[in-house]
Image (cartoon, rainbow, N blue to C red; front, side, top):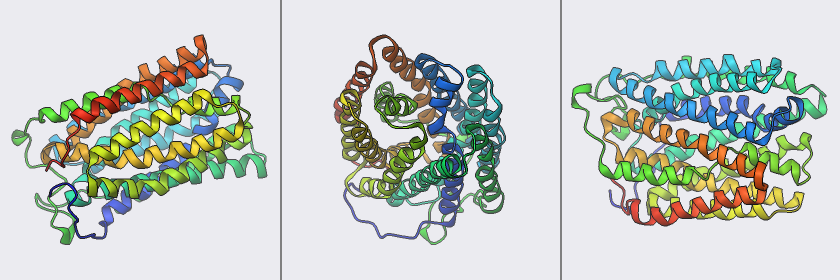
Length: 404
């Protein structure tokens, strides 16, 4: 199908909805902790911004390297569900132990284990999702999945806020209670997530080819355009440091610690609301224009964080930041699926997440170091500059038409 062609809108298959529910519950568990973690590390445990950058960058890089291996293995054995189950289970078991951590290094170790779980599940899940829908609906499917993921990130901070403000529980108790939605996510996988049966099983009436590849011997090489696109994504990611720095910046500009979960929830309301339209828009007008608009928007938001001086500006910037994710996340993943041979989608998503995660460590170290040495405005200005550079290069590299 060429770019801009209208395809009949079909209902998304049950597998997409089940994976979306799993992500919703898991993100609810994660985001009960995440918006509070920068303050917990810097005030309770005495970590510096540079240490925060090391922790978050190392965690994301670890996850992404594991994604590369798990995606490849899923393609080899032609089964994705066991890897998905293992990854979500490991994270669910590990996450609550942050509640008893006594040092930043203990938190780093737990975050690394948690991210290993994310790494195990990420590429196989995306490959399974991509193979369950037709290419003309791929952006919408990934957008729907991201919308559910972000809705979980709305629920989690609100639950944390209620537990902190209304029930007056401690940070450590809130961290411990995150095990509940995580356990529900694992239960959902056990009940509702299955690899398609047979080599041609697909999404029912949609007539979609199987998410499971043919045979390891028939694996086709990745096209050169795939590697070129990864290079541009790498450049952008070098300016896309951990969002923990945005939360730390928010407290500097006057947002109370107890209000951080609400700020984070509002940010994810926008992300969730924008994800389905953003993914569907990439199905209609192409991945390239949607991604370029998103990267330019990101640069403007980061420039805003560099120049902000008041708490109300933080609220505006966090809401604007949510639009970036709605524009880009579904389109990026759909583009990776478009470019990859069907039998190598797990490997393709492994490379995609691996490159993004490897870049996360220098990105977060760069921002944390610039923050420590030169202050937040210089640090955020550097991120904005790298995003603009990626947008300029992407205008030449990203495919103009969808690749089948």
